[in-house]
Length: 113
Length: 112
Image (cartoon, rainbow over all chains, first blue to last red; front, side, top):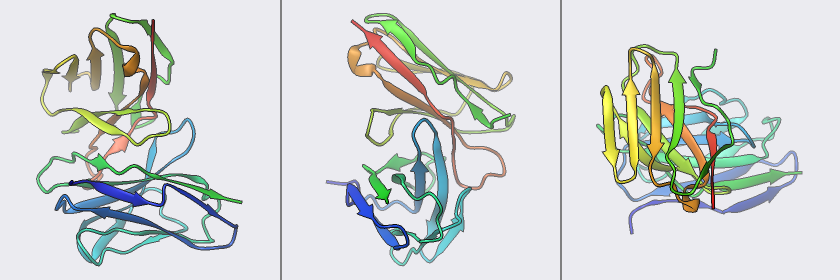
């Protein structure tokens, strides 16, 4: 089955701890994206990557870091510097030449207390 | 002014009616427009894409694009209770790189 997987579905952490969210795709898509969604709000872009070993900051990159060492994988680290990390995190991917068409994984709901 | 605007709703329609969802955007030269459906607690699902002026139909869904007036709409014919969800409009804005800007979504409720 082709698709985008995110793990875990739910994640709980204590304040001050870094946490890494996984995103894997086997669709052979070139571009990958990380968004966060807060209740009643739209999706806000954190980071995106169009090719391996390259990524760009989105609108709310502060307190987050990413890597893109493999085409299939785009993990997101939420650092202790992120002031309000509790949110629903969504990973998406897009094939080359798709005119920005993006497909989403199931999401990870992170709760930091 | 927000770059992509949607009425948050909720928009309530009776079963079998046509639901009309609207989205306006700020960038006159935007090229790509998408509608996503998001059920509560789930991730967004791409349901329609449209790139040129006019209508595009796919089953019960019709996307309408008017670049001169900078709006895109989604019509859902014969609305079903299973269509109850939040609908997100997404637009590729000029100068935004290879990325989309999302509206905050319109909540649709289809009532029996």
